[in-house]
Image (cartoon, rainbow over all chains, first blue to last red):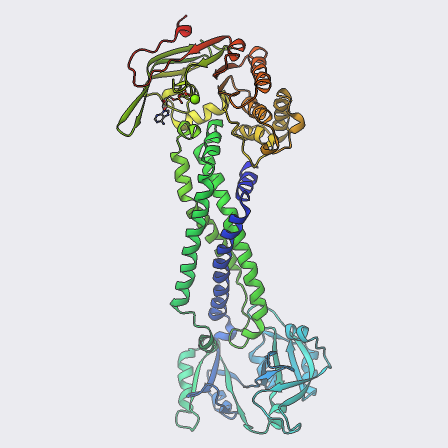
Length: 385
Length: 234
Ligand SMILES: Nc1ncnc2c1ncn2[C@@H]1O[C@H](COP(=O)(O)OP(=O)(O)O)[C@@H](O)[C@H]1O
Ligand SMILES: [Mg+2]
């Protein structure tokens, strides 16, 4: 009881000092959590799905297209199970700030390779029937309040629509997909590649990239080389990597989590440590007399050290919790914008444990000096001053 | 001498830089169980030092401090801490209550060191507060109390775990006459009706009336002469 309430009351003795110190802790944990989340998204791997998915792009320029018929050659390789092609649509809704993660896909083969986007049998039939139908993630649908059957004009920054004579593509929501895991992005927009191909004014029969699903257990590295070999001498040479590597490389163009960034986080934590230690030292120094009185009442140095530790823990935990909450909120806010290069960015549960662990250790380190002071405290001497 | 206090052949020397401050040189005091001793003497004569030695807050340079049959000058720090919690209550000149805790919680503080459960603790705190006449102010913070009221709460805290010995360092030093008298009579009751052994450092001549005995410490700084303690010898 006393270990819980007394340290809290002591911590709140000077609310301004408490919250200012807390603020530096919030900043540190905010950065830590956000960077961890980005890291998790980058390192997201290990599922059978993306481990055996090979992305083939133009060798020189990732944004250049490849002939769709490359897929047939790739599919002929014994290690390859399925192939599909995907085109980047470059879409936005109404306003350029509402960027969409929109791609044109061939529904049947795409769903076989990407089973993580959950569609019901009925959804599939609907989409099959409706050429101008699009499938959108639950989150995206909620954001724009789209419902199945809604006709929505989607703008493309890249593709001119022959039918409308403009960059506006009128499409109908054929289905809304759900996701099974937090790694899967729930704000995608899929349109049909055949519909896209027929209407677009240029680039027909080409796709932004091809995806091959390798047999489980196959050597993806060797297979990638094999694929690239197929087109080495054609006008559009290719570069093939696993999806994991592809996403990482794509992400690194936007977010460079280099050592410099880590160094910044480290520096922030170091500063935090100085601020928090100083605040704790000050707080304890101001009431050495009270601590001497408690010793005279029979409280041991260990007990007093526990009280001080708890006080530090309150401060660090308050900062850590607020930092994580801020991080969670801002990650949620940018999730759509980051979706392009960091699909499914989210806070890994492991991060919470790490934050807890860091907080516990940090609290111990920042009350080290005051605790040493407590063990050295001469009761008689302190009571006289 | 059951539960009494004995300072035997005590010398206490403080080192202030290169200066040596000899507070005691072969001091002997014996206090019996149940006594109410007023420890008097001019400022700097070592009253606080003597009191701290009796409560194990400080150690003598030489000599032994016996309380009951325990040689507390030889006990380890941890042992002393436990011993203080059970046997000694302190009352200081300025009240030294924890400012963040209510009167009730301040009095309850020493009971956190016991195995008493919440109900038992509450009962004991209520009794102690009633005894010092502070039941009505249980939920007040120290800053909401007057000096005399704070001192009463401090006394309640000192007696709540029912120690045999109360060591008071100028408990009425900061109080007006009327409040001081009330505190003195409270200590008197604790001694007479509850059998507490009380050692009270004081400048107050009136305190002598309440005490069963007065011990006078003379100014002896840097003086190697034996310290005269007439009443103690008597
Ligand atoms: N920590 C210390 N270092 C040096 N001298 C001290 C210390 N504590 C007390 N003294 C000296 O010891 C003497 C006795 O002090 P004290 O016991 O407080 O006297 P009293 O309580 O009778 O006024 C004083 O001269 C004081 O200055
Ligand atoms: Mg004194």
